[in-house]
View (tube, rainbow over the protein chains, first blue to last red):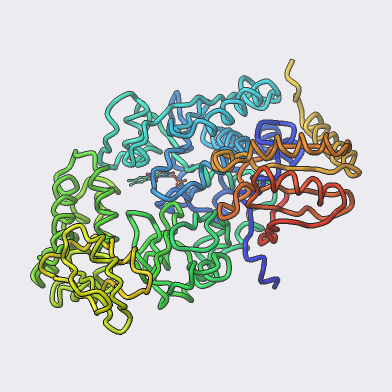
Length: 489
Length: 126
Ligand SMILES: Cc1cc2nc3c(=O)[nH]c(=O)nc-3n(C[C@H](O)[C@H](O)[C@H](O)COP(=O)(O)O)c2cc1C
C-alpha cells in the first residue's frame, strides 16, 4: 500500500474540489442522483435498509447506528416528522462540520432530503451556530439553488415527495449541541437538556418524531447510496464502518483536517500523517473526544482507532477533535483546562454538573498550586464517578472523563504534584523553581537588572543566585539570559 | 419550471459537466481554497494577486475557481494548479509575493517554486 496515502476521503470527497456555491458542480459529480433514484425508483424501507447495512454510526459523538435510528422514526405514525441537522459543532478544536458545510453544502442538503424520504418527513431544519457566517451563506445558497433546480421543495421530480429545509441559529453554547437541548433551543426555549426517553425519534421537535444527525453523518449518506452499502461496509473495522474526519490540533506538525478509515492506528495518525510534535519535542499524549474524552499515550500507539477501542481506553470518538500534547504539557493542568471549559458551559439545570464541575476544578487547582494532598485523589475519583452516574445529560456524564483518564494514565504526575510539590512538565508555576546554573553563569548582571522583585544577587563577573523566597517565577530573567544559564525546574 | 424534472435531466447535467471539464483540458486551472480559515489566512488576496499577475504576464488560457477547505491548515493559504496534461499540484504557505512568483514560474513555464504539498489521500469519487 502507498504509505503516503493513508487517508480516504468520503465525507470530505468534494471539499476543495468543487465550487460549493455552484450547484452544477455538485450535480456534475453525481450529486442528487441518490435522492432522485430513491424517490422515483425505490422505497423508504429500502433506503433505510441500505443505510443500516452500510453500518454507518453517528459521527456527532454518540456513535448510534444511523439506519436503526431512522427506522425508529419511520415506524412512528405522525402528521408531521422532522429531520434535523446538528451543525452546532461546539467541541473546542473541532471544525470538520464547518469544512463540510463550506466546501460541500449540497451533500448535506441531499442527505437530509433522503432522510426525510426514508422516515416520512417533509421538513428539515439545520441548527447551525451563528459564528459560522460563511457556512450559513453557502448553505442558504445551496438550499435556494436546490429549490430552483427542482431537487428540493414541492413534489420533487414529480415523485409526490416534498421536502424543504430551513435554518435555525445557535448562539454558540456547547450544551446546545446535545440533541434534547438543541430541540428546546429550536423551539425558542432555553437550551437545556431533558431526560430521555422520550428519544427524539419518538417525540422530539414539537413532540413529533425527529431525526437528529450530525453534518458529517449526513455527508456520508449520498456516497453510501450511490456506491452501495457493501462498498461502505468493506471499509473500517468490524463494528465501526467507513471513515472518520479528525481535526488534528495542538502540538503537531501537520495541523489540519484528516479523513481516515476506521481502524487506523494512533501511530499512523500522529506520526505518519501528523508528522509528530514540532521542534523535536517528545509526544506525550493525545486527547480524543474533546472535553468529554480522555488521553491516549504512546502505549496506545498500535490501537486501531474506532468507537469501541477508544471507549475501552477510557476515551471516546466524540466529534473527532484530536488535541496533541508534547512533553511540556502538564496533565493535571490539562485536566483543569478541560474542566474550566465544561464548568463554563454547564447549563446549570442539574446539580451534579453545575456544582460538581466547580468542585472538581477547585480540587485540581489546589493540586496545581501545590496545596493538594493524597486524600484529594480519592475525593476526585468518587466525585467524578458520582457525577458520571447522576448528571442529566451527556455533558455532565462525560465531563469528569479528562480527570479520570489523566489520573489513571498519569498517576505519577499527580503524585509528584502533591507529594514532592513538583510539576514534572514545568508548567504549574507555584511548583517551580527558577535557578541559575553556576557553570553557565558569567556574571553579566543582566538578570538581576530585569528582575522585577530584585531577588537576584551577585557581583559582576561572579555567579548569581536567586532568592527563592522572593522569586515570583515570572521568567523575565530566563528570557533575558544570553547564556542559557537560567532554567525552570 | 424546474430545471430538473427527471433522472434523464439529471444525467444531462452530468454529461454537460463532463463536457465542460473536458473542454478545460487545454487550460490552466487555478483552484483557490476559500473556506473561512483560508480566507482569514489570505486566500482572497492571493486569488486577486494571481489574477492580476496572469493578466500582466499575458497568460490568457487560465481559469480560476474557488472551493472549500483543502484540509491543509498547516500550510494555508493553498492553491491547486493544474497545467494542461499534468497532474494537479497543491501549493501552500502563499502570500502575495509567492502567488505572483507562482504565476511567473509555474503557470508561465512549469517551473515548480515555493511549498508543494504532496497528495496524502485517496478521494472517493462517485
Ligand atoms: C454536550 C454535548 C454536546 C454535543 N455537541 C454536538 C455537536 O456539536 N454536534 C453534533 O453533531 N452532536 C453533538 N452532540 C451529540 C448529539 O447529542 C447527538 O447525539 C448527535 O447530534 C446525533 O447525531 P449522529 O447520530 O449523526 O451523531 C453533543 C452531545 C453532548 C452531550
